[in-house]
Structures are given as C-alpha cells and as structure tokens.
Length: 95
Image 1: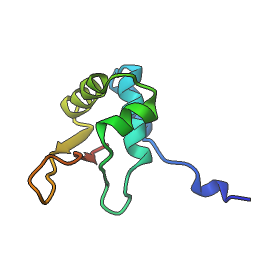
Image 2 (image 1 turned 45 degrees about the horizontal axis):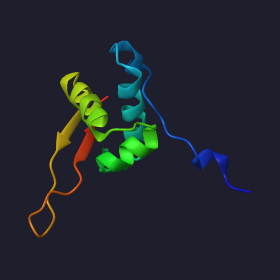
Image 3 (image 1 turned 120 degrees about the vertical axis):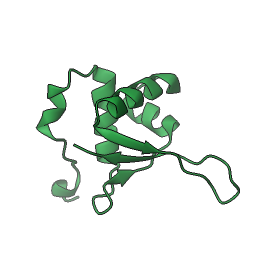
C-alpha cells in the first residue's frame, strides 16, 4: 500500500488573494506539484503543464504564466540546451 503522506503538494493560502482566473490557479498548482523543494524551482514544458491542467492550448498556459509573473508569484527564466536550442523554462515560485 503506497504511503499517502508522499502523495500531496502544498499551495500557499494566499494564492486566493490575487484575483486569479481558474486557469492561473491550475497552472500555479501544477508548478507547485512539480516543484523541487530544495531549489524552489520547477521546469515542466508548456505541453506538460497544459496536459496536467486539462488545458487544450499551450497559448492558454502562456497567458496564465504571464499573469503569474505579473502578479509576482513566479519568476520565469529561459533555459537553453547544450546545442543552443530553447529548453523548457525554469519557474521559481515566489509565494
């Protein structure tokens, strides 16, 4: 039987004080779920975020990420592969 204490993630209660749309909250929660607790960063692809949140278009994820950055809830950093191509972004949670 799996240990249920390991099957959860934490979200700060203040997330509801920012007048976010449901898509924004879903994306924030997904980032919390994927968060590396030691470094406080997550780096899922836009496609993974969309799939994990039940969002059909990656552009909708982009809108949610933009809102989260503008509200100061996350910082977004672009990452590059060794070949110089774009990799998945790194998201640092602030709240």
